[in-house]
Amino acid sequence: MLQVQDIDLFYGASRALRSVSLGAAKGEVTCVLGRNGVGKTSLLRAIVGQHPVKSGMILWEDEALGRLPPHARARRGIAYVPQGREVFPLLTVEENLRSGYAALPRNRRRIEAEIFELFPVLKDMLRRRGGDLSGGQQQQLAIARALVMRPRLLVLDEPTEGIQPSIIKDIERVIRLLAARGDMAIVLVEQYFEFARDLADSYAVMDRGEIVLAGRAADMVEADVRRSIAV
Image (tube, rainbow, N blue to C red; front, side, top):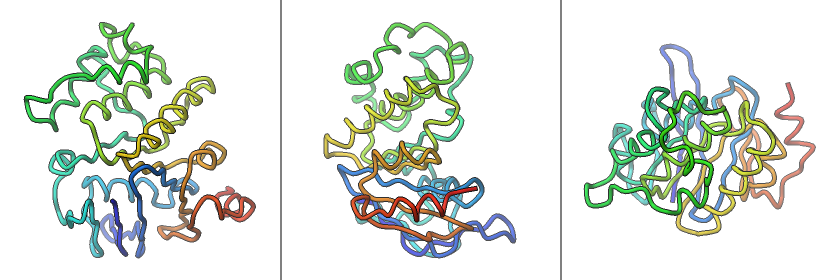
């Protein structure tokens, strides 16, 4: 479904990605691991169109995305949950969810019941402001907002960051359920190794803008991965 082919990305004269290739298929979770500052978020920004690549190609459903802006990629079924959640603090939970309508045609603009089946806590908080939620509740809201647009590719940047263990388990359960449906590809950037290991169908480890280890999770040598992501 997603094919990232030998992409290079620069911030001014600084090269953030070096010939990076990655794939993600429907019904699977692809986990990208690595220390801080090695290019993981830059890779996600390239996929969702927030930063143009200098060379290489990104294909989604056999279409080359080229320089399509983020809103055009969203309309093609690509949803992004950024690091730090970025919910609208002064909008209510319901208004935050409705902001996911932007990528949908008018006749599909509704919040499906499945959203509250996946995140039941949100149903009781629809009138609360996003900024009044705990960090874990905001993370659930950010994922739910992305799911409102019914994506076929879900891109998540460190969804466990700053989250209490009980909600990490809830998020893990949701990601597992979404992958099991078989109609969505999931790309997950994570530093929490156990979380990524338990969810991954395939993995890639980044260092200094390059992928230094990659493969199927079933073939992962845990010691090698841990060594590559150790600070």
